[in-house]
Image (cartoon, rainbow over all chains, first blue to last red; front, side, top):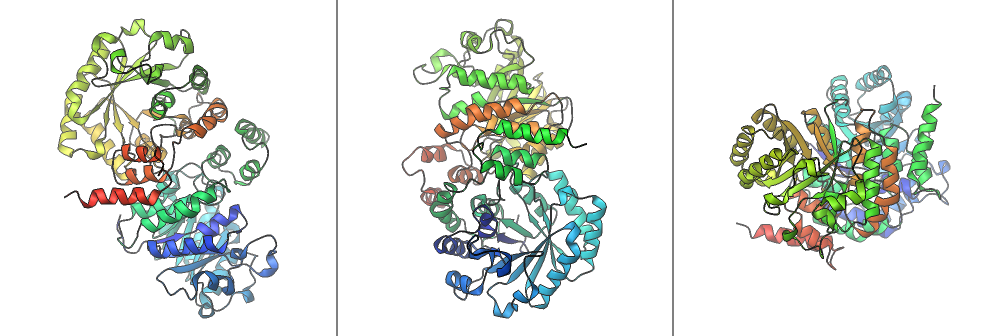
Amino acid sequence: MFRKEIKVMDCTVRDGGLMNNWQFDDDFVRSVYQACVAGGVDYMEIGYRSSESAYSRDEVGPWKFCDNKDLERIVGANDTELKLSAMADIGRIALEDIPQASNSLIDMMRVACYTHQVDKGIALAEHCLEKGYEVTLNIMAVSTVMERDLDEALEDIAKTNIPIVYLVDSFGSMYCEQIQSLMKKYTAKMPGKTIGYHGHNNMQLAFANTIETIIQGANFLDGSILGVGRGAGNCPTELLLSFLKNPKYKMRPILDVIQNKLVPLQQEIDWGYHMPYMLVGSMNEHPRSAMKWMNSEQKDDTVAFYDSLMEDRATLE
Amino acid sequence: MFRKEIKVMDCTVRDGGLMNNWQFDDDFVRSVYQACVAGGVDYMEIGYRSSESAYSRDEVGPWKFCDNKDLERIVGANDTELKLSAMADIGRIALEDIPQASNSLIDMMRVACYTHQVDKGIALAEHCLEKGYEVTLNIMAVSTVMERDLDEALEDIAKTNIPIVYLVDSFGSMYCEQIQSLMKKYTAKMPGKTIGYHGHNNMQLAFANTIETIIQGANFLDGSILGVGRGAGNCPTELLLSFLKNPKYKMRPILDVIQNKLVPLQQEIDWGYHMPYMLVGSMNEHPRSAMKWMNSEQKDDTVAFYDSLMEDRATLE
């Protein structure tokens, strides 16, 4: 698939950090940055932009804040083709803590919100636009909201000048037919907007679903190297680059960082295809119960986790 | 997706055995068998049917032959709903070594052949039909044959009374649009035949592509538990069962054997998503070079493997 409008966004540090509280050493983050530059990746999401008051630096690493002083250590003045992105969660960043884009190494702000928060999401996104950033609005967890509420949210976004809106499969629970159906909705409800896609890999569908969104017209595609990310992880950036035909993308630098940084990381952090993540994905549930299980002593007792999920369901009515 | 005609074929022992020369102990094979029975799986492919003269029992385990005496140790008289299947490769089985179905615990014979061997494949499949077996014909490696040759093979098969024909993504190299296109061809060229699908997971697409074949009408679906199989492995049976809505399929027995047998096996045998397998898949190449690399001391040097592939390509003209 060659379409020159397509942009690849690597979320290795931002989404991978959800597994280790962004406690990456500088060498790791620099290696990912250099691989993205050499690999022709369009954007690197290097972390979250949060207010210092929202988290303690004793608990989370610098990529939960994305201060310029931390960024400079890694990217210097970022005199490259690679653009840098940071994600902002509603309620975790005060407007006055967002610098003007001209004073920041961050090129793009991505605002993540739930459907019920879309007013707040739009307000924060518009604020970032006014400060000179490229901006996306990412609507999370749409597999669990009622269609009417999603329609209303999309109609509200359609009226704004936010240029890029993300379809997000937060629970890794969607099959290709659901992706296809939502992509048709997003493009119909928000004419003229660029659509992006961020998937999770609970059912080994993140890459396949990303291809489906490309077929349906999505032009912003999220991946992470070796698929690192929360729980089961994300669409592997290396698969995405191997699929896209644009000659600007290079595989070798990505393989190099996989071999030297991501494979060693996988010995420490257990993302990927594990049964607890698969089960919550297939049941359209938040991964928190699976992540808790994977961090417990019962980690390997998949059947007990399954039984606990079924017990929860049996008592729901 | 509920369609009562759909049958699930678990290839754990047959395809997984390609990674360890079928050196499974009886307890492992019996556990997989019991999980398939309890999980409501329709068919279990327990191995290959080969002539004793084709291989040495010093090198390969009993599941390369599927003799009744070995089968009986595992399944007794197989007084269950689960049917047993064995695969036959062209040239590895003499016709006189295939017993009458009424004298065998094997219910189904699956004949695997390349497009250029389709005459031999049809002859062997028809022989198995005459001996009373259920029969499929599995055309391998169709991602590397010229369309005209594939068309002719399918037209030849259409004239036979072989009831089930498999689309096989031998190299794990196909994307959903290629699967869709081939499924349309198979159904158009062979009206009235049941179509099956066997994928490999080099690009994390085996499950997604299986769903695509279901959408296109395939009713025989191959999987293996935890995806065990040659190289990157297969479509995980547990994902397939979680997708299918037929209440006869049960997840718990499959999770039990994953936890107790497959996860431990994965410590010994390195199937799954590894860069060498991903690379040969994305380049539409036979996995043998990747499997050799993964068994060498250079195993972890992905970049060197990539360079060797690119060198081969550079000198091809």
